[in-house]
Length: 154
Image 1 (tube, helix red, strand yellow):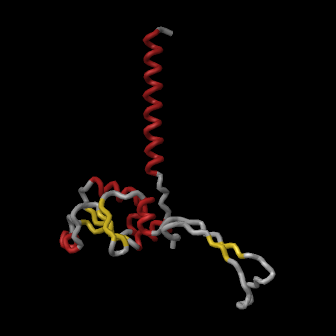
Image 2: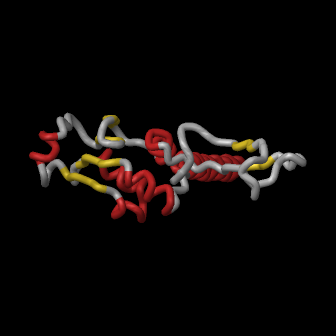
């Protein structure tokens, strides 16, 4: 194999590795794994103010994926009065629980944290002592519950 061919093959391999790395890193950054239950929870607590031509708004809706239709989305270019009434200065803007205003594109994880729709495993264990009888309201039982912050997915 001549020297030029070796250099060319090394360059091709490096370019392929870079391309694969970029796609892998992008998939890690965008892998929020929005499921229907989480989408419903977030949607029930938010309003998204958007514009149809805003690139950040388009990216935000893309993050919502197939669950976009669950969300209340007000397009400011189509309903400008609603946006003026809500004092929306830029888009995308999220209103969380009718009080918190969050501007800019938000990841699913950020929306989970802002709304309290974070997925948690709740484990409840009951102390199985002789004085603990779940059928008897006069007995004494110790209950341990693990939680996560800011809230359990509803």
